[in-house]
Amino acid sequence: MPATPDEIRGAIHGTAPTPLSVLDLVTVGAGRTATQALRTSVDIARLAERRGFHRYWVAEHHSMPGVASSSPAVILAHLAAHTDRIRLGSGGVMLPNHAPLVIAEQFGTLEALAPGRVDLGLGRAPGTDGATAAALRRSDRLNEGADDFPQQLAELTRFLDDDFPDGHPYARIHAVPGPVQATSPGGVQDPHRPPLWLLGSSGFSARLAGVLGLPFAFAHHFSAQNTVPALDLYRESFQPSEVLDKPYALIGVSALATDDDGTEARRQVMAAALNMVRLRTGRPGLVPTPEEAEAHQFNEMERDFIRSWNSNVIHGTVDEVRSGLDDLHKRTGADELMLTANAHSGDVRLRSYELIADAYGLPTA
Image 1 (tube, helix red, strand yellow):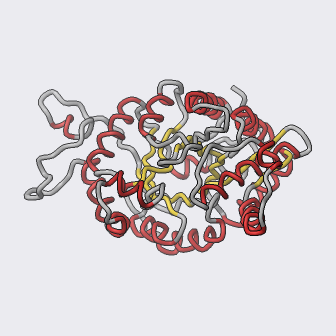
Image 2 (cartoon, one colour):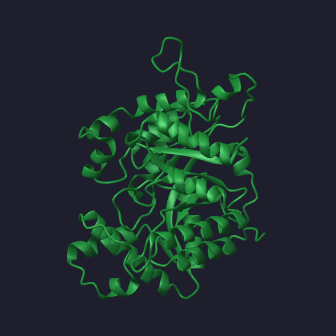
Image 3 (cartoon, helix red, strand yellow):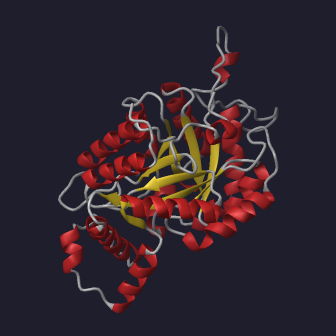
């Protein structure tokens, strides 16, 4: 069975203040291909497993040339074939984009492929622009998906547990692989079911996760101003459940360390910031090279955005990154830090995780 929160808190994680994990956006840099980006993801997942990171998540995004993670379940199946122990999951699947039955089937399949190490993290945002969301849902009623999130979540949970009540329209529908196989002639009960996480960047999912007694993951890496209020709301709203007896909050953190005096980290972070400028102004593309970012003529509005954005990216030397992570943990009290390294170069991303692991004395086996 998956580790309990107390077991996670008590796990050996070197001198890190709390367990460290990885959020992979499967970024595609200019001059590189999705194939190369996905190979880097395998390399990072193997490194994360070898160095004692607790879990490895991928996030659903659509219509973004620089992010090759439109199909988390497919990527996770590939990573499951290349790892043995590390927890794998979605950070997250955007529930309004999919029928709950489809998600239950996909993650039931993943659980069968990697028993006891699959997390199902769920978000209520589309993970893309409105037009793309409409194409995904075959509907232009975009607010309906977000507004119906609690009902969709309840339906998904019913499919995962195979416990629709008698008389329900879906009572005779079963997510397979799933619990129904245990009740079939000759069936054997699978002891595992992917644990649910709620993801958020504001207070809605924080409150809902607390009320339902579910673990909560907050997107500090792009909504830093809301982190502490959301975590406070989650903890204040928390009600013990069969899943958790106390709150468990993870936060996503942008962090990038380099071997030098921090110059390369700053160059890579500026390239990632230029990519965000383009995304926020409706011009998504591949992650530019540091050289392209250095040559770019930023206007005042872009400079203001980048100053604000980069203020929440922990980057520089490995000592600077460790200090920044330690300080963030003290300010938030997060139970787990999930690091995402945004850079043009896959080698730089891979090296950053290695350096952070070294800084905290994580195991090398």
